[in-house]
Length: 152
Length: 137
Image (cartoon, rainbow over all chains, first blue to last red; front, side):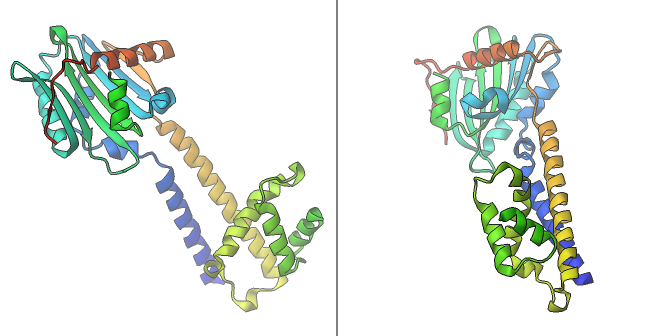
């Protein structure tokens, strides 16, 4: 009888663990190792900065489950830190597409490696006119072609 | 007929074939409203039956008394799992990142402002036709 109860409890515990594993969002673990996310946290409250965090509820139509962006009206001060973080993150990128102006990186489109094959992650950097810098972190089912189409 | 079988089941008087009938009945999608509340239990029992080797009960316990006990145990287990699922659902809702836009430290959560910021973000990183790129991977 005791063995039977222990078996029941073990099975219930396993079921609960399985459900926990399946139900918890993957976003947190997927983002953990990205250096660029420190940029979002460090500068989000500063003057001349617009930060955006959008969940799947809003981004569903794009096939995006998590969207972050930070816009620096004048990104010169933060640029060294941004470039350093991007250098670190792009080491594990699956695809790299970069544009240069006067020898300096002016735009970067990176498809990042992901532990979950059903999920794509992208990091986008662009330096615009008057030193405006925009950084985007995108996570979702959105394919590279769909992203290109979105950015046309 | 099904209602009677359910009553028999709870009294521990159903035969094995009647229990199979009940499990199979509740596997179908269209269940009359008054019987719907029984469906999760019988679906779970069906799952358990499919994996009965995990839940095998020694023969000497397989008496009416113990069958009744087992029904309660299984019901308790299902209730526990259902409660866990509900808890996880609520937890998951809380863990979902909320949407907001922050301008110079001032946080806003209205849909219009968020959508404007999304459009602005995409606009800022648009690929121009005359952009020239290096592909390094």
